Image 1 (cartoon, rainbow, N blue to C red):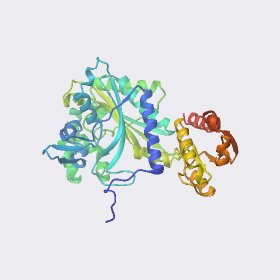
Image 2: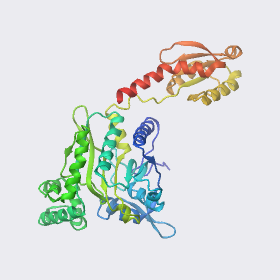
Image 3: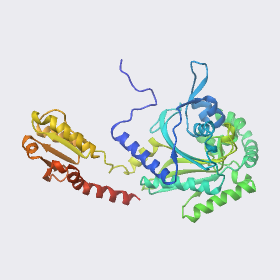
Image 4: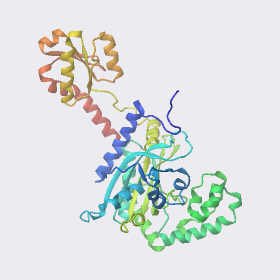
Length: 438
C-alpha cells in the first residue's frame, strides 16, 4: 500500500520547516519584548470549551470542528483555534489569582485543526501563532495589542502593511445592530445561500462574513455598525484610534469587518500585506477585544484582547515577497577525515567542537575528498576542517572557507579562539542583515 498523508495535512521538512521555525521564532521574540510568556494547552479539549467559548453561530463550530466521543463517551474536539482553550486554562489554573498580577500576557503556537476544503496555503491541520492579554479593560491594552501585531510583521521584514480596524461595540450596540440587520436581510433571504438562512437566526453579524459573491453584494447595502454604537463604545473606539494615531500608525476604517468568532466585542482588526507592486495578499493577522469569555468559561468577569496568525500563510507570503531568501540554513563546520586511521580522532574533535557551541557534522566513514566537499556544500557548511594523520600529529587542522575558498592552518589546541575568529565575518554579516530588516 502506498501510504500518503491524510487529506488536508502535509509534512514539514527542509526549507519550509526552517522558514516556518524562523517565522515562529521572530513572532515569539517580539511577544517577549512586550513581556508575554509562552503557554501550551492540550490539542484535545471537551467540546463545550469551543461551542461555548468560540460561539455556536461561528462557521468553525457549526461546520469545521473535528469532534468525536472518546472511549468514556465524552465529546472531545481537536482545537480549531487557541483562544477558548487558553482562557479555559487561565480559569482552570486560576492564573488571575496569582497575586493580582494582571494583565496576564500569554503567547502560544502549535497545530490547530479545521475540517474545511483544502486549498493553496490552507490546510486541515495548520499552525497558528497568537497572543492573549487578559485582565485589563482599557483602550490602551487594545492599542498595545494592535501595535505589537504590526511590529511582529515588521520584524519579519514586511514593509507594506495595511491595518483595517472597526468596532462592533458592546452588547447593547450589537443587540441594536442585530435587529437592524434582521430587518434588512429578512426580505432578501430568498436570494441568499442556505448558510445565511441559518445565520439570520443564530447571529445576523455572521451574514457579513459570507463568502458567496452574490450575498456579498447584497450585504454592501446593509446598515453599518458605526450607526448603532453606544456612546461608551464610540468613545472607547476613538480613544484606541487616538493612541494608534499618536504613534504614527496608518489605518483604515472598515465597516464590514466583524471577525468570524462570537466572543469578539468592541475593537476588531486585521492586518493585510501588500506586495511591492501593491497587490493585496490578504489578511495575515486578525484579532480584537473580547468581554465575557472568561466568565462564560467559569472564571471572573475579565476582559481580554488578542490576535492570531496562520504560520503557513505568513511563511508563504514572506517567501513570495523574498523575505526568507537570506536565511542561514546551513551548519558552521564540516570535518573531513583523510584516511580510515583518523576516524576516531575526527569523531572526538567533532564532539569537542559541538561542546564549544558550533554546529558541526562529519561523514563518519572515510571516503574521497571530493565527495566529502560536496557533502559539506550540500549541508551549507561555512567551513571545512580537513584532518589527516600529518595534521593530527602536529596538532593542527586545515580550515577552508567554502565561500571564498581561502584555506589556513589552525591550532587544534586553541580551537575555540581559532573558530571564533574565523566566524567573525559571518556574525557581522548576520548582524548587518538584521539591522537592515529593522
